[in-house]
Length: 98
Image 1 (cartoon, rainbow, N blue to C red):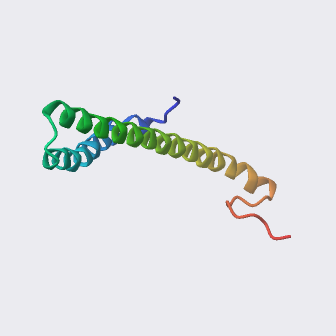
Image 2: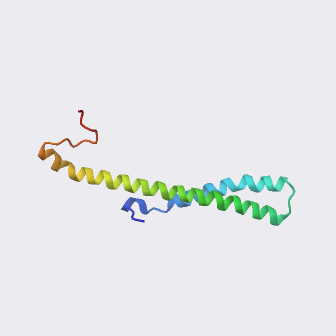
Image 3: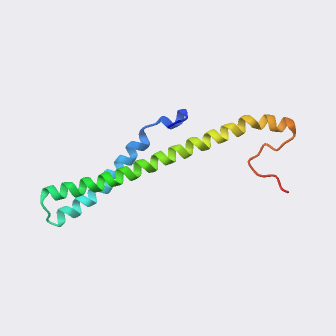
């Protein structure tokens, strides 16, 4: 993935894993109340953790890609803005009225 300098942070992924742990705790408590054997409790909790962690990590990756794409687009528009103003074109992001 091509990231800008600000998007190389690892804390969003750590936050996603922390949320997955928080989501897995009620699953563990529920499995514990169901009086299942220990291996079933651990397997069920691990499954909930893995599914929620994968989903949240994919969401974080999507957000980072989208954020980087928007930053690149805005940077390109800002760099082209002085050239547009010199040629008489509008430099804003709003379309000109017809």
